[in-house]
Length: 429
Image 1 (cartoon, one colour):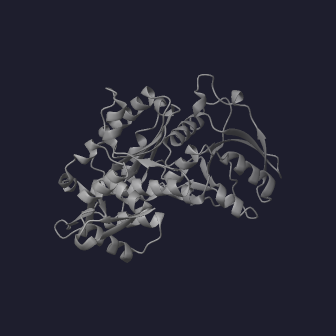
Image 2: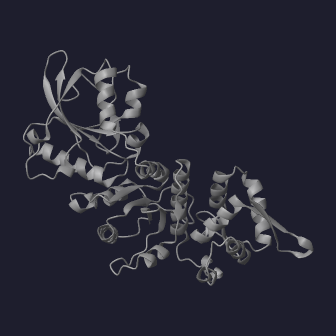
Image 3: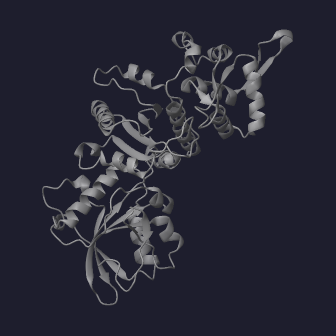
């Protein structure tokens, strides 16, 4: 639908269609966006060049549909931004389509430009936007909501914190937490505790919490130097050796900002209840398709592997006895699915590596095989440890190169994943 709004003298004004209306609504929800963020949102719904979009926004500003402000760099470092908020006529348009109530209209528009930390706000908006567009691409009708509106809406005394951003689909809620490496680890732990409390109070909701560490994938007003892997590792360590993160209705993700869209894709598959058995796929390719994999498989029962006092949510997906096809030598391995950034998977891997290394299982385990869906996820998922007995593999690579010797990866001393090289030794020894 396309409607003309007369805002000027002599019948001058602008045409607003459904995509324009959605853009104005999104800007209202997010309060403040850069010109590039606005264009990214608009272009995802209806292809438009940046110059054409800039001309449209210029016309909108002329009639007070949006209002702009130029944010200069600090002390000649960093980047300049053109910022936009909704204008009075933008409110009028939304009211015409019953998208605003009286309380919303009473807000003071000028306050939108007053922020203590622009970098944090725009990094948050970029992550929220990347996730929103990823969900849209997967066919999910995801909505955005101001965090304060969610907090006030649930009316729980135990929940008095504000996430940085929030997206939702009915009872599936995605929270975004932006990390500039300025908060202490104890502050991050407190955030985790708050979300766990929320999940326990609202067991019929499903929550996904994404902690994104700012990186150089997004231009910032000032230069960030402490945004590397050490910080990311410290963030992931918060979730290790704690059983409460394994409750069923909440998942935590820790990642660099540039991987937000990939994390959103994984979350979208869960929202769609689409489950891929990555371990089953890997076993099938290795056993039935790859003729250069020199082992056959035999599944072992968990009761013969784990001690009776171990929690089953920390078990691997499969325990296999591998028999070498030539010399018949046998080794036992645990196979586990691992999802990029997912702290439950990392904690499970942490536990299994510990009990394997310290011989706390009923049988000897030689290796753990951690299976990723894609090589991209495998290479981008930072593991803050130097485990020697964990092998990483990606199903996308196994399937694409099933006629070649399967590629397994190990962690080197710098905690990077490098391809295992068979130099006269065997993979699972």
